[in-house]
Amino acid sequence: MPNESWQAEQKKLRTMWVVVIMMFWFSVTFQGAIFLLEGTLNLILMSIILGMLVLGIALKMKLQRHEASKGRPDADK
Image (cartoon, rainbow, N blue to C red):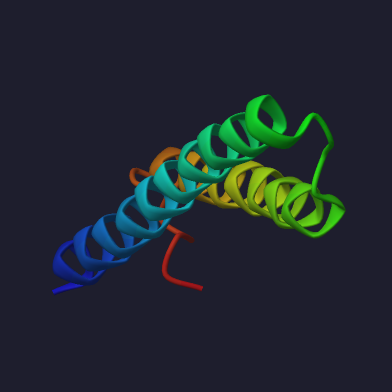
């Protein structure tokens, strides 16, 4: 049972991380297209990109900590 809950949490974290990374790159591509068309940066979109970057880093760190805790006996706490 603990292994199943660990796997479910790992799958959830990995899915969230992948979604954030995909949205980050979509936003960067969209910002690049806007920059090429208009010649200026959209500051609202830049703040969204920065937020996605920070969220992606935080989720990746959480995912790595979670994967490192797999074999530890105190991992369920």
